[in-house]
Amino acid sequence: MVLKKLCCFEWMVLCHLLLAAFVSSKDHGNPANDLVGIINENRTAHKLPQLNDSPGLGCMALQYVELCKGNCTGNRAVNCKPPEDDFTEVFAPNCGVELPTFGTITGHIVGCEFKYLQPSEAFSHVIVKDNRTLSILRNKSHTEVGVGLVGLHKGPFFWCILFSNGQTNSTFVLEDQGKGIKQKKGCYSGSFFPCSGGQKISVLLNNIMTLVFLYIFLFLILHQNQFVMM
Ligand SMILES: *[C@@H]1O[C@H](CO)[C@@H](O)[C@H](O)[C@H]1NC(C)=O
Ligand SMILES: *[C@@H]1O[C@H](CO)[C@@H](O)[C@H](O)[C@H]1NC(C)=O
Ligand SMILES: *[C@@H]1O[C@H](CO)[C@@H](O)[C@H](O)[C@H]1NC(C)=O
Ligand SMILES: *[C@@H]1O[C@H](CO)[C@@H](O)[C@H](O)[C@H]1NC(C)=O
Ligand SMILES: *[C@@H]1O[C@H](CO)[C@@H](O)[C@H](O)[C@H]1NC(C)=O
Image (cartoon, rainbow, N blue to C red; front, top):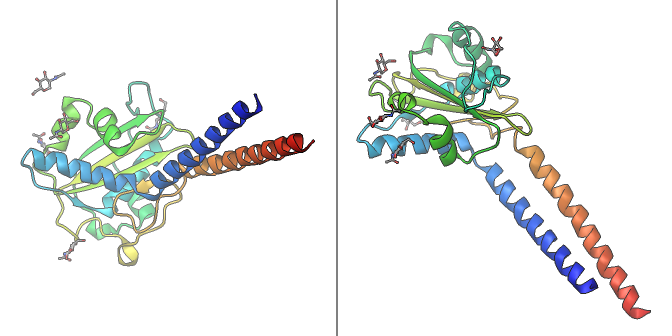
């Protein structure tokens, strides 16, 4: 009976350790960069040119979802229409985009989901989920792309893709030698800084849970030894 219980706890500890390792490995990457890769793969598979990753666009995409993150409707749609002027008056200054380099935005896609999705799932289930968004993705005018994403501690999670027809390296240039201003939350493609917020809390929680289980496990082993000695 005791042995059976122990076995169960051993498995729990193992599962938690594995889960913690898995979650933290997921946290190290930048899912916004992964999405740019997926977008370019999809375009090249359809004989369209690759898009350049623009950190300036990416950071403004993050600002866009940061503003819209209260407005996730069912159906993975975002009910949010920031005023056009916000791009030059709010998003660009908050990111440190040099205003004289502000180019033309040729398309945008926004989506949300109540749980976190891996980049490939986010691409096919949230971002490019219908013919309208597919035609935006496949538009020949684009030359640059930027991806931003944000989630509250438990979600909903928001994704935004911005496209532009700007010249490489000369539009949406970030100040401070391309680093721009560090963002408090979320991820964006091409960022100099690592992602912040979002997933980190769940990693911390998982580590605490793992420790708790380890203590219970050790306690049981000690307890059992005492029992055997008596
Ligand atoms: C978010 O939704 C609310 C309620 O529908 C609306 O009043 C608000 O303007 C929306 N926010 C934005 C930035 O569009
Ligand atoms: C591509 O984007 C440009 C700029 O936004 C737009 O004028 C044009 O209609 C789009 N083309 C297609 C095929 O959707
Ligand atoms: C590109 O993405 C669309 C939308 O998710 C999908 O239907 C299509 O199969 C993808 N193409 C390739 C080559 O992966
Ligand atoms: C989307 O486009 C494809 C191919 O152009 C077409 O077969 C399909 O009916 C379209 N779907 C919708 C919902 O319009
Ligand atoms: C533009 O950026 C790319 C990659 O960031 C770099 O390899 C290239 O040399 C840059 N071009 C110019 C003209 O600065």
